[in-house]
Amino acid sequence: MDFQLTEEHIQAQKMVRDFAAREVIPVIGEWDRKQQHNPAFLPRMAELGILGISIPVRYGGQGYDYITLGLVCEELERADTHLRVIMSVHHGLNSQALLQWGTEDQKQRFLVPQARGDKYAAFCLTEPGAGSDVAGMLSTARRVGDTYILNGEKMWISLATRAHHFLVVAKTDPDAGHRGMSAFIVTSDMPGVTSGDIHGKLGVRAGSTGWVKLEDVAVPAANRLGEEGEGFKIAMSCLDNGRYTVGAGATGLIRACLEESVKYAHERSTFGRPIGEHQLVKQKLAYMRLWYDTARLMLLRVGWLKNAGVRNTRETGQFKWYATDQSVQAALEAVQIHGAYGFSDEYPVERYLRNSKGAVIYEGTSEIHQIMQADYELGYRDDKPLRCEMPAYDPLTWQHEAEAIAGA
Image (tube, rainbow, N blue to C red; front, side, top):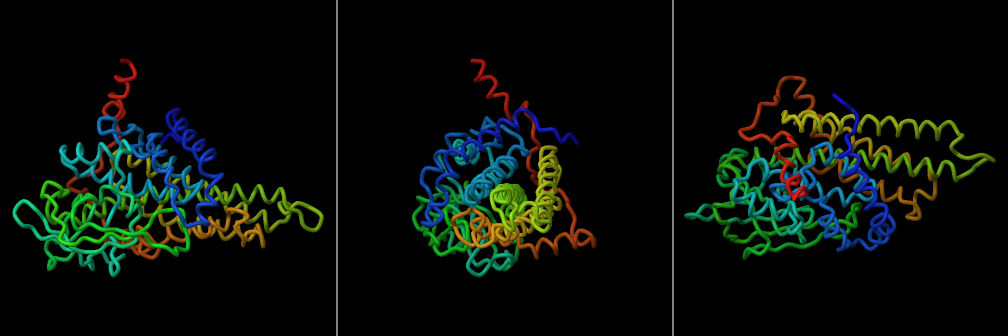
């Protein structure tokens, strides 16, 4: 494995880092305090091609590989977690599912406008009474001719009030448990679809989080993703994609905590010398560096596996678990280094701490991931290939259209 980033990796990373430095970091504190989503960020991310960064050019994307996706998510969360959340739901949980499971017609109707950023997408799995227990969902989809009638309510949905397309998992056979679930693309303009925002969150306050309600929504059978009964498999493959972006974002949050702490350690003096000269402050910085470097290596490993088209559920889950847990620890240490100032919003580390907590809960709690990793060791779980796996990255087929356009 080559750890050297390519020129494409570096260019994409720099583009997002510059965007964040110029347009996000100077104003994000204000939007976080107001607990409002800046309406300029999504269109700007679309304009820069970020929303389709790792979707083939023929489907409206930029054609970059999965390592690039991880690096982009790291840079976005370095600025603020809600930007990475956008990538997790729009790109990881929805667009990549269409790339993996969608028919050509579905890709043209839904994936192309999403990759271009003309339409925004969300993922609807969690319900008020069903989170880690996915089979406990109550949403149903009843087939009537060439239409499914969907009913149910989804909760904690990022971009709920801004998305045009929802990937919804519901039960087509309520008595069959997880084998009775199916997945559908629902559009926000379908009669019976309503949504709203959730306020009062601990963190990710500048992000859009809400609920989606489905009341007798008629969805064409042509909008079903995969076969009937494959909804659970599809949802779990979506989480493989989303967890990679979550882990990559947490890597960026660790880095943010480290960079802000190093800066403050040079600026702040106690007992006649900079606090960076105190041994216990050095210890905290050393641990943060260790956590960041380890998470970064895991990012590169999982991205490499994804590029190769290798099933990576185990490795991705381990990455998400480790990086998010350590991002919480890094944020705690950053606040401690800042002392009383870390307890106020004068410095960004208190926002880092609040934002870090969500990622150890969503897309599989840390406890769920511990059980999963133990089950792999015990032989209770395996990585059998799905009927449909994510396509391996191939620049010849993902990017050649872009080269033809450039040469025209």
